[in-house]
Length: 465
Image 1: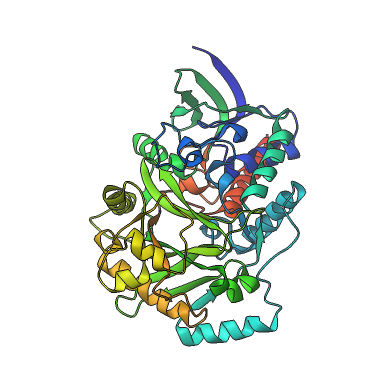
Image 2: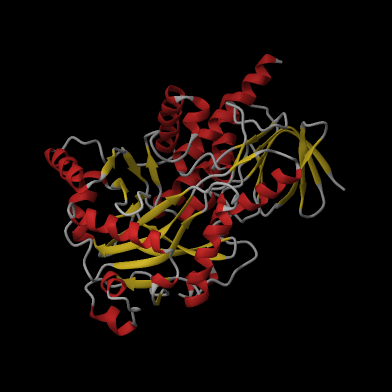
């Protein structure tokens, strides 16, 4: 058995792990830092199914979700420059500190190649008119300055970060961590899949959404307290880009919240992709749907998610299992993702290839199977989704068209949240948990900010010594 000692071990090479490493080596040279991830390098992340336009092949390690850059490597690459969305770091760090970290993280992204343009600043005269009409539609618009990388440019930025860290951090890709090692309630290191052991003074766990189930099992084994997060279940909506253009031109990502008349459930828009495409994701063996907007390639459509948020109370404590079950129903009926026209859903019939061919919207996800989402989504979720589309139609006429496409299921598996201190430290001293996999963030910026916060905490402790 080989043993190697480090000052800091970072588990997960997504934005949280990368920014932990960046902050550590930029602030103090000479630290022994290792960054581990079970996936491959960015240039080796290849999906055999996507390349051939085929269904997911359930690879042991999903190249779309795992590897350098994490699940965000092939995402739309939106940097949401507001503490309003993207996680719950404000609960730990406070508003002022989080805003400072967001500005700092944004500057690092720009240093590595993010564009200068910011959307959603609200300076155009049409902005106030949209806000006024939203009130009458029953929608609360979330004001969000956004810097858009785009799928292609996102990979370029991550590649530059990889090159910067190359000679400063020991990067070990395809190194799966099986267990966290502790002694007397203090972090000691990790055990890898090959049986070897790595030890460190501090361990930072940032496994991303792909590793959330592993982290949950490890937390249970180590007797760490967990907090149950809500689960968001809904659909990916696809419309002609011209329908959403009055909103995407002003906001790029138009985020709004609606409370359904029937059940008063919270319904929200999420991840809007102007001139983008709908894609599939493998969430630990379950196929879900998502969306991208490429930096250098455009389609004629815009897509976005409409999600219904549900929190569960006693005795049920498995929101992730519930979301997986809903998504699995779509997989069972379609071998992946179902697509349905709004008109067919309202008429109580399934969509067919012939009915889709008559519509104005050409699906960008050609793998999706025409079907009936009412056989998948719970009734109250469908009601909330349709009410939200009606409300949105008052701001962007054509959203609630019979030809609008709905893909399902889209499920956001917000990981069960570990009980953490304001320093993002677990009940085990020296063991920190950050990013989406720890349930404290839900996007690139706050995930990156959580890495910076923990790196600074470790550096402060080093200085204290």
